[in-house]
Length: 162
Image (cartoon, rainbow, N blue to C red):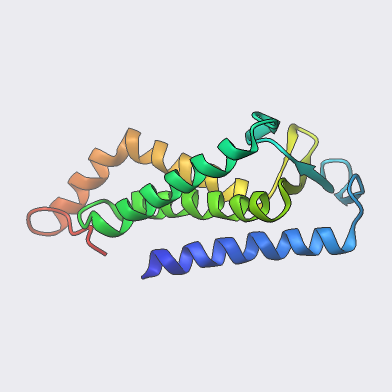
């Protein structure tokens, strides 16, 4: 249940920020938040990450649906998966769903966060996907140690069925 709440919060935050940007800015507008270091810049992205596959909208709709369903089935059906992995996958699925809403309704994704040191402009959903992927990488690198610590603190197999 907690994973569903996290997913809903991510999607609501993503859509709320996008609605705010679309309703208060004109595409191409840019507002300084921290000098030139961080700006809110309203753009619409017809492609996937970094604008890739902009000409294949059917693929950009179908692939995320399959991925999101697969991830959520895994999260809810695999009782002994480490909670960190479940949270990570939930973030990836929720971020994917947030951008899928835009693609379905508008044929493009609203992006707004712009950092001078990082050229692509991105949104809350992109942040969720990125954080989820980083957590998966951390677990892939250090998960075995994390599981051994959990097993040492308790009795037997770590209880990841939360």
